Image (cartoon, rainbow, N blue to C red; front, side, top):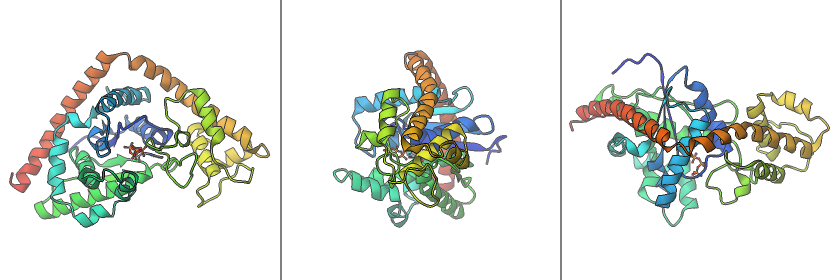
Length: 331
Ligand code: AQP
């Protein structure tokens, strides 16, 4: 196996819509902060996105918009490798091989499959079921050490690890065993309308989700409408999933203030006042990203150049791993 100078980080995100505050705090912000210390490889997982029916024209546009948006969020194509999953064919090739090395039983335990098949009863396709094999392929192709993800994706990194371990014990040392990196804070930002559910980009109730590209008025409106309980004090309650806990976590992630500092800051101030401050903090954080995005999305040449170069680098690395695997299994 190749010895790399820096530890390798891989993570991906679906361009299935507009990225959310949850995606930002649970994933993108942490990717941005890892680019100097690690050899980072990030992807827009468009092959994963088609496990749910997409409109082709919209998907194409979403890929370009999200590519520009993540650069605006601080993903630097000069520092890391940021590419589009379907452009590197080794992902689908390895996914098939891993399909043949994964048990139906372990796939049926995946909570995302259970949730999404309830959500999309009209289209419970095989890809939705074998999604973890493609995700394992994404990770294992790059000899990844760490996978920074939100808490909802931990189970998928664990199955990737199990598949890798089983493969290694059958064919000899082939894959590095990846570990999930879950942020201490912001690993699961909850829906603003239902704090029992995670904030999601495909939620049917738009008021439950803040999108990175939401304009200030809309952010204020959504935060004002966010569910809070009947109490009125801004206090974090351990082990409970309440609307106020969710807003405290969001405010803490954005301002870097501790829960105690927040409780002191808003003592006797009431929810209305607190919500205004939360909205202001989000608006401030997203306004510079939105300005950068507005410029980048017009610069098609730059975006295309970055994509081409990243595809070339990723394909090169991935094909080395794929040859190693073909050799092991006798293809
Ligand atoms: N609410 C969240 N809080 C913290 N982290 C989150 N992530 C997603 N939602 C939250 C993290 O973002 C990364 C990319 O996720 P994804 O878009 O590839 O898939 P997802 O988890 O299925 O995200 P969504 O928003 O719920 O998309 P849809 O609605 O299309 O299914 C992952 O690291 C994830 O943990």
